[in-house]
Length: 111
Length: 266
Length: 168
Image (cartoon, rainbow over all chains, first blue to last red; front, side):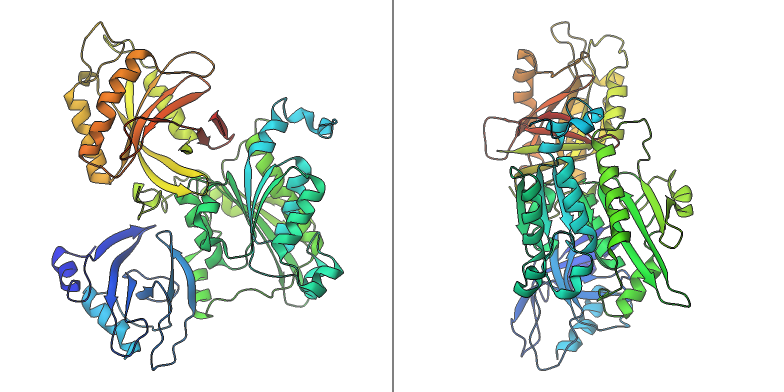
């Protein structure tokens, strides 16, 4: 579970970060997350999974696929989590830790 | 209705009305799901929600009940094939044919009294189970495999996931290792060998379990079930893993937060 | 509005087992079910998760009512709703076979206390159920509506499935 301070750190990038637990996995909802320059769309809802799933120690899901200058392997499509569908590219080996740092590591794929 | 259900009157005086009023979701209308659609219609299930994004192709004809040569030429959506078959048996059936993945229409799934899961892959099964648990819907899952080797071997299973009873993980049907392995293989688990006769056994059994759920004709009530199919010896019996899981309270779907829609608004 | 209330067979058995217990002075017992909500193609799903027994000393000895619970009971139920972001459904029992219905006093009192749950969870529906030995009925107060809706379906999910109420 993220601390209040850790959730507040995420407010730099989005308003209203909120934690959920679903079936023993911890997620942080990041509504209207500001993405790095060059991404389309520039702002999306995102879901940071801080628990291991599908062979990834952590994973960042988006409410839609993102176009950016890098070719990404969107190997998770329409994954139902919290009764919404999410998309994720393959970006592995980001260990769980302070949420803002985990998020930053995942966003590197878009830069 | 002209005595059409007279041969199953042992299921109870109210069974005809009961079956007519329940809604069954069939997720995946291929080899397993098409059988389920047919058998459910025959037994009198009156309402259906069908989910499958795919169209009929020639390789499907070896096992998709109701699909014709013309369907493969025309690439008829599988849900339309199933709808046509259901209504040919029961013209009064209410059918929602949805040519999409089930997760693109949560609300239609939640309107169902049972879900028959006929998907490939452990991840997809786990995801469907999670949504069924959220809406407190029993899930009856079927699947078969042909294992390559010297010689080949056919196997399969019927697994029931009931709210508050052992889930797929409790029963050992889905393990984290299986999900991780699929994750590493990057998802797509389709294209495996499939044959009509094995699917028929599994699908018939699934429908029988559902009917027992609605109108039990005997006092046997497993609560959950894990039946293993040996397609080489033609047996279907309780998998040894079921004996381990059956007395467990589910450890994976217990919290109040695992029910309902986390983002629900009035 | 189409409202479908679901609970597990195990919970229904637990609820009935609790409600049939004799009380030192109350003629009837009551409890609360903490629920979660979602939307289906046909309306609203209300999903019972936690049954909250009313402790013996949460009842008020008032001969005008078969069952009258005090402020402690209401406080506990409100706390559960707040902590768990839950819809709360009051439940009591009429010990007969067949479809039950609320007495005039049940209707009058529930229309007072059920909307009080909006003080803690204003965006959720709350309500009341009455169960019999083989059936059930319910009323649901939906946010921003003054009058309750009759619950269209009540299902106990288990082996066998029990369709306790089915209006649609």
